[in-house]
Amino acid sequence: MIGAIIGDIVGSPYEFNNITKKTFPLFSKDSTFTDDTIMTIAVYDGIRHADGKIELLQDCLIDSMHDYGRRYPSSYGGRFAEWLRTRSRVPYMSFGNGSAMRVSPVAWLFNTLEDVEFYAERTASVTHNHPEGIKGAQAVASAIFKARTGSSKNEIRSFIEDRYGYDLSKKLDEIRQTYSFNETCQGSVPEAITAFLESTDFEDCLRSAVSIGGDSDTIAAIAGSIAEGFYDAIPHRIMKKAMTYLDAALLERVEDFRAYLASSTNLKKGVSYQ
Image (cartoon, rainbow, N blue to C red; front, top):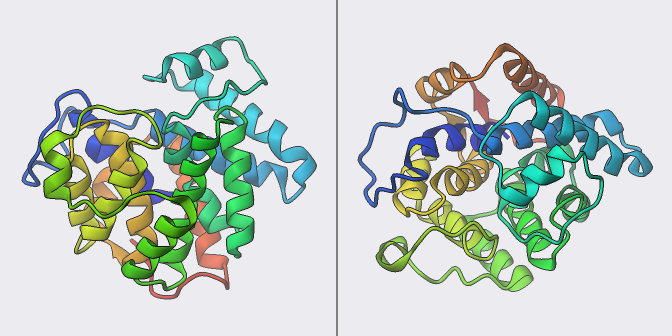
């Protein structure tokens, strides 16, 4: 979840001002959190409010998304913005990458792959109930879960290709040559996963993701969410700076998440959130 938030902030200045290189300021006066951060935290809150009661989960997720969406106006996609505006409780068959960018809390709140895939589907389907929207969310959540429970990059790659059918064979250098803005799961989730797979550490993952171009904040949010699970630590200077972009209410939810991680007995040891 924290990796997704940091990726969103780092990628935000480049969403409509794409770059195809890895040398750029991680943070600037134009950096900000966007809908990716807002809805990631909304998913976290929705799941926590359901408190393990599956029959309450859908309503809790919808209520949380509506609440955060109204409190934090942002550059939401057109159909999602309409869903918020009308306070709709009905999904609209989206396969946009919104389902994938907000799913990361699922991979930390549940401790079996079966549960992670189940709850990823639930968080997606309140709006993104198209098969591709659900697949994107499940693939990202599964990759995070695999990363945080000790799988190698090769194991993660093989699992995602075999289970979800995404082609992860292209290198970033090849992707950059022809990639254009694409807000669908099928047109951005494989690229984000590839950015993680080619990375050498958490910061390099963010730089790699942004350098693809396209929907930079969302690609970096997805890649960063996987890197959070795989690498031993988010560098202190990056964590500290990123948190300065959040207001008190959002910071409170991040601290609640960190407290959950600290109290859990099921997480990979050695992950550092400084």
